Length: 135
Image 1: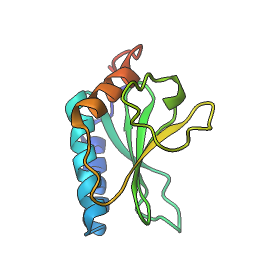
Image 2: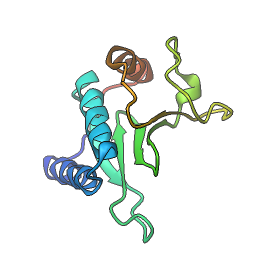
Image 3: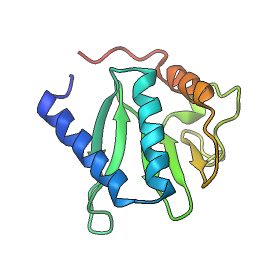
């Protein structure tokens, strides 16, 4: 089921606010990653989930027939977590954390790290393989 236009706009604004709140390199990195995710497939749906007292703004989530990846601003990194990452082919070895998990894989980006845009988009496409489009 596709998210309604107003829900999508609200989620998009909430993610904008999360990015603005982190007014250093981490916000810039999350904005860059967000752009690459949505460029990889314009049908990917943005949402904000898991709002709680310790993180009232919540966490950006990108979905396509289920959660594709989660963006988190950490103290010293920006992390993209793929809940089904262990089942995704990663020939360029972008995954660099959560490697011991049977299901989850993640990529930590640190200050000054360059993003291999082609490899990240390919990884996202690989994650989408086998998914059916949201209607």
